[in-house]
Every structure is written in C-alpha cells, then in structure tokens.
Length: 270
Image 1 (cartoon, one colour):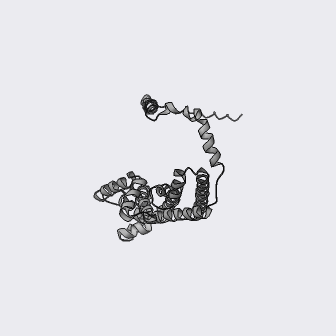
Image 2 (image 1 turned 90 degrees about the horizontal axis):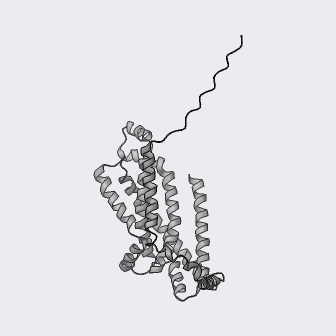
Image 3 (image 1 turned 90 degrees about the vertical axis):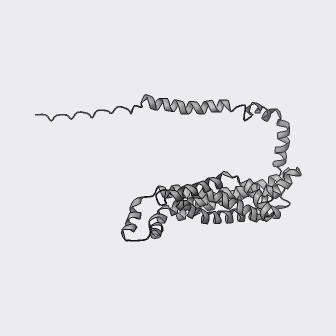
C-alpha cells in the first residue's frame, strides 16, 4: 500500500477591510488633501517662482556665504561655548522639573484630581514659544544668558513632562505589583517599580532635548538672551555675510559634535 499524500494546506485569504474602514481612510486622507489645496494661497506658494527669478541676488548672497571670514573665530567659539552651556543648564533644570511633573501627570500612578491640573500646566509650558519666554525673562532679569537658561528650562520642562508621563503610563504593572506585595509605600513602588523601567527612555528623551536646546539657545541669542545668536544677529544687520557664514559653520560643527556625543551616551546608558 502506498502512503497517502497529505493535502496541501489551504492558502488563507488576504485580510479584507470593511467598507467603513475604507470610507474612514478616504475621509481622513481626502480631508488632508483638501486642507493642503485650501492652504496654498494662505502660505503664499504662488510666489515660489521668485526663488528662481531673483537668482542674481541669491547668487550674490551665496557667494559671500562661500567665503567665510574666521578673523573673529575666538569670539565665535567663545559665544558658541556659552550657547552650549545655556542649553546644558536649561536641560538639566528642566529634567528636575519634568520628573515630578511627569509622575504627577501619569494616570496609572496619580489620581485624576492631580493629573488634570498638572497636564494643564504642562500644556501651558509647551504652548508658549521659547522666544516669548525669553523676552519675558529678559525683562525680568536683564540681558544675558540667565534669561536663555530660564526660557529653555520652562519650555523643555513641559515637553519632557509629557514624554515622561507617557513612558510611565506604558510600563509593565508586574514589577509595581511585586513591590506593593512586600508592603512597601507608594514612594517605594515608584522608586523600585517605575523608575527602573522608564529610566532608559527618560535618558534618551533628555539627551534629544539637549540637542534641540543647543539650536534653540542660538535663536534665543537674537533677543539678547546670551550665546552666539547675538553675534549672528549683529553680523546679519551689518550685512557681513562672510562672518555670518563663519558663525553658521561653527554652529553646525558644534551641533554635530553634540549629536555624536549624545549617540555615544545613548549606546552606553541604554
């Protein structure tokens, strides 16, 4: 007798989507397309050809940028270092504010009567632009890097608090319940059940914000909040585009080095 040949398994049918799902996709993506078309005039896309009709002025400007003037490189480097210090201190203080705010805004460890007002505060801190905060602090504490540090601190604290709270809300409940089973206090549950799970992600968020703040601190210098932004603004107002090019190159090099350092720290800590 010959052995029976097993039947080939039936090929499953491809997953089918319901008509309602297709209709929702069409509605969402169609709405986005309609919004883009409606916004063409609002964002002045009709003047895009001027980018090419004014090519003579662009060529003149580009020619100056291609001849950087590093005669004041000591001043540029010193101001760039000041900018990095502003970003470092702003991020450092923001982490200390963001950790308690993030824990208080996490729905799985804090009561709703605490979560709601804390999230309002976080939204307020995130919604106010760095430049507006910088102007407020320039009025309060005067021109200088302190205004930049305070502006970055508050804005970054709102961003980090949101990211920290979302990381806490996605933790595994098992370690927390295990700590609770020992009769530990709620503070111990956070220290031994929550923090070890979210610390790597929090570190990554903080490093990323430090990179972003290095660029934000440059812009804050335009309003007198310290750093290389003030030098950049002065050179631009003086139409010294050769020096502007040198400043931009120094900023690019500094931000690139910070990015490389952050990647090395992530690989070591995560």
